[in-house]
Length: 216
Ligand SMILES: Cc1cc2nc3c(=O)[nH]c(=O)nc-3n(C[C@H](O)[C@H](O)[C@H](O)COP(=O)(O)O)c2cc1C
Image 1: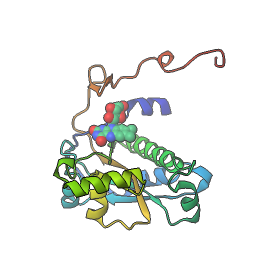
Image 2: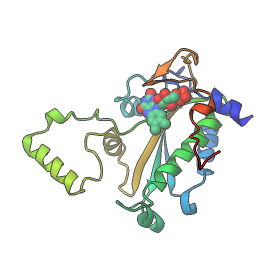
Image 3: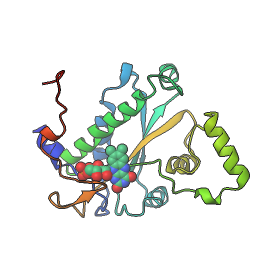
């Protein structure tokens, strides 16, 4: 049953424009909240953007999304003592919060699909905001120095940087990921559509399982 739902979920980019009722959005968030978290830190927080004027601005670097009902941001609360310990820069457990965010997102998109709501995960790291070539020489040098000295906490050319400023998100919250939700209008043909290097239809599982002396 769950596998059927997993296979039916597709990344949808064009939605009908209809608004998702608040109770359904809450169900989706609840599914995210119940995802496992490393050390049971429960550090994830959620921002729900549903106003059309805010959506238009927040998604302006992703113009191919149309008719979105809600844009949900998944944030990590860095003010929790364990977050500071686990997710600080260069900590070996740093990736745990990314895993937590991924698990919460997958819970959310599957819960959404189960109640007839479509979704697409949104990469926030893209360089849309400010093209590198517009930086002055001093800015370029400062940027490279910060990179070398590992002083840059966030890419100033990123979508995430834009969102943080636009939404005035306090520094204690690190934006981990975003997901758009809505009622799908254009559904990709699973048999034909490719995205990036691959068809979106997955191959049979033998193609993904690595076998060897150590494995079955
Ligand atoms: C981490 C992550 C980031 C993604 N970012 C984007 C994005 O920015 N824009 C987009 O259209 N799709 C994005 N996707 C969706 C993928 O392109 C999609 O999952 C893939 O093409 C497979 O299609 P499916 O989700 O329908 O199976 C993202 C997916 C993941 C997991």
